[in-house]
Length: 463
Image 1: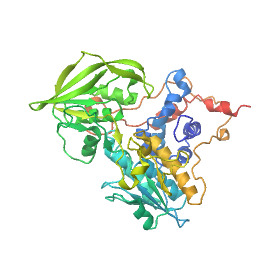
Image 2: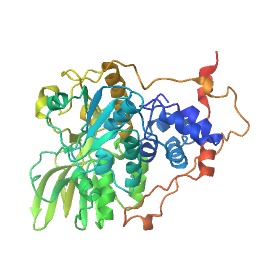
Image 3: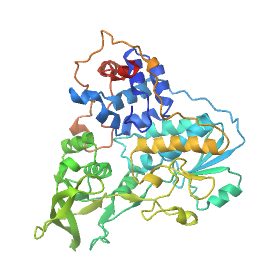
Image 4: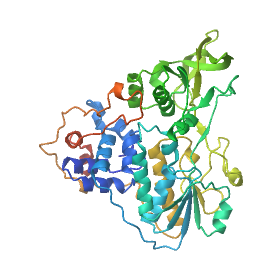
């Protein structure tokens, strides 16, 4: 629970699943997280890294159980009546904006309008996560939850002036526009049209645009976006896809599950290498690289890659896709509120910017992070905006009540059982299409997996 950005009461909802009380489990989750299905599909589950079962065998499959609960309990959301005369504008419909809008409407009773520049709502989960990881139906269901409670979502509506929003009657504004501007390496030849950003590729594919990458593709980067781009490239018909990463496999930030699934699908890896130049060679792109060796850790805490003099080498591909990071598009009116990295500067405790009544959350503040981190910032923004409007905290982001759990172990707890593997679509049935790869746990699997919890939360109730 401590590792969860949202501080969800994980022990309590796992226990509810062991008793097949799925309604109770979902209620516990939704105290902090409105979008359980979304997170059940794409959460990077830091809770599992902190799970004490790691010391025994494998952590409890917390993310998969959350998805099971969300898919098992029938979708019910009733309209929320406005009990406030305050109006809040949310600029951007990604996870942070969606979460803030939900809590401000559902628990704060405010009138909330979400403005989205794209033709569809959903932010980066819509444009940047492949459909084989996050089916569009899941995202649409979560957006429908917002509409059901009375949140107005206006698409094709970019916002350039916060002042105009205040003039039109809004009492507070949340900027949650994400980080959609791609960062490039700035090396010679990068202007070549055969070189594109991963976010641009994913956006085109998710919008249904036809993309031809050729037979050989190089992906520059080692995060989840790089792996998403690599797996999408394979599904678009590329015969050979290679991820080029400047550090070793151990330092790669991508989720281990996605790394393994990519390997199963035939993705290749080139470690300790960095591109230094691109050259057009007929219809091919020659990628000139240099080998690296790892030195002392840098600011990220990972070993710093240092180029090895005289180790240059090259290879040819049809397309290069870079996935080394993103920035936020600058809003000219708020340029003084942005730092040198193109991120909004906010007061840490309130998330308010220098402009009174203007708040910011999500990747636009933190830089590219996880969906769960953005949701947590959205919940925090809901608290501070509600307080700004004269209310109180509406989401308790740090609470644990051991009284929710029986203070004894039970005979049917399956402490020695092995982790239930996530059922996957067979490799040969998924490499050439965008059907969902992870199929989800059955009820029998979810209950058995929840019973693997070591119940280490009980020690917090011992005096």
